[in-house]
Image (tube, rainbow, N blue to C red; front, side, top):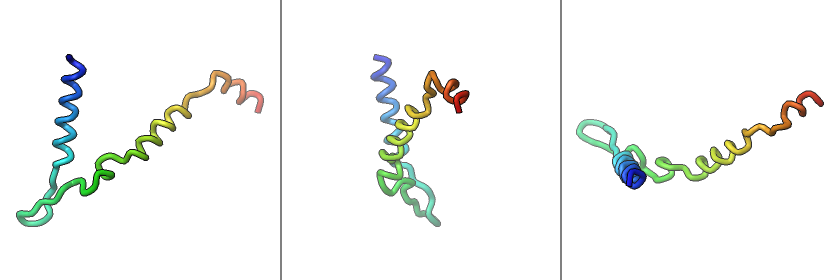
Length: 68
């Protein structure tokens, strides 16, 4: 139940963020995110996840440094 509640609140926050507007002159507003990719760049997020896996050190990394 708590996890579902967390998911609903995250969704509500993302809906609010996606509809955000900023001032664009006197009495005018324009959307903060004009395209979905500006709001969420799937490819960039995927690269972050891939890089996290690569950054894990091997358990033999210390030995490798000594051998060099």
